[in-house]
Image (cartoon, rainbow, N blue to C red):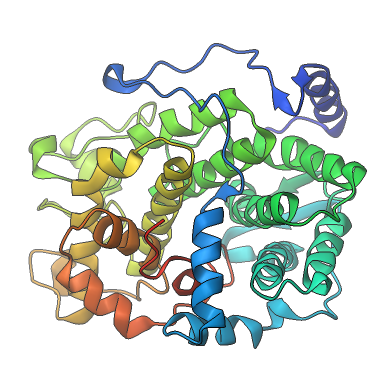
Amino acid sequence: MNRSPLRAKIVVAALSALLTVAGTQVATASRPAPEGGVSIAAPATFTHPGVLVSQPQLEFMRTKVLAGAQPWKSAYDQMMASKYASLTRTAKPRAVVECGSYSNPNYGCTDEREDAIAAYTLALAWYVTKDTRYATKAIQVMDAWAPVVTDHTNSNARLQTAWAGSSWPKAAEIIRYTYTGWPAASVTRFATMLRTAYLPEIQAGLANTNGNWELSMMEASIGIAVFLEDRAAYDKAVSIFRTRLPAYVYLTTDGALPRTPPGSGIDTRDEIVGYWQGQSTFQDGVSQETCRDFTHTGYGLAAAAHIAETAHHQGLDLWGENKDRMRHAYGLHTRYQLEAMPSWLCGGVRSQNLGPTTEVAFNALNTRMGITMANTQKYTEQQRPQGTDNLFIAWETLTHAQNPA
């Protein structure tokens, strides 16, 4: 896997800094062509905080917790009892994070992911309590990594970069825009870290992998783009998402066979069936990874939901564009999480579980858009409070349950 050396990254960072005006990077490359003629322009003015969670959503969450209302209070208590909310946490940064398949070897992989989740957890704790100790600790964790990490290596490098890179901007958005004590020099170091050690690894996507990888990469890319106010990076993430999601979740309107990721080279029926883990019968909502296992499918669907939610906060209706694909995907997988698999799907055998992956999508589609989702509702309510997968999903009952914003 080819990577730019650190010197090249530093040059890129310097050029980016020269092309930045009032915190907004000037787009230097042509924007990707929109699919189907749909505009993918980034907003003229970015909304902050606006990565996964917005200011109105934060305020709704805080009001519910302080009132002792459920399920938000139990979700908050779960978060505060976790190791991620600890005020005595010591971050464990390293210059090169090396992650092989299934994090073997694991040189900084768990540390990086968990420190990023901790920063986000502490940011949420700050917002609810207004106790500056939590904001200060979140900054301390981010400051520990910002001047140290330079690269990610080995076979899981892009996925590791995506998972950690999706949590960092969620934390940073809350702290930067709701707390006044983050020094400007520290913010700049953190932004440089995102631009040089994370974005180059993920923003081009990776068409010939299982779809959860590229969707996670685009989740991190769009979050970083919002924090950096980088319109070109935002547009690129949206463009890739618009082709990857239809290649990840099937609808009968796609035709007899699922779509394939552009540039993947997957063309024939046999190749498509192989890519879809041997599944040869296609019905609404089946995912490219359904027959691999429900856990990896949950990763992909959660990342897609996070992308659409961030875009929602920036004024782009990816939920509206993809409501049928997303409601069928969640409906099918929650149904067969709750009941036996039919013989036509994966030979009637389900592997693993969806995990804490449904709150954001259920809130967007059901609470905001009014779409009835009986199976998803039943699964979501049974799983509350949905906590963290210790990878990139954290505390979404707290932030998104019945949240109308």
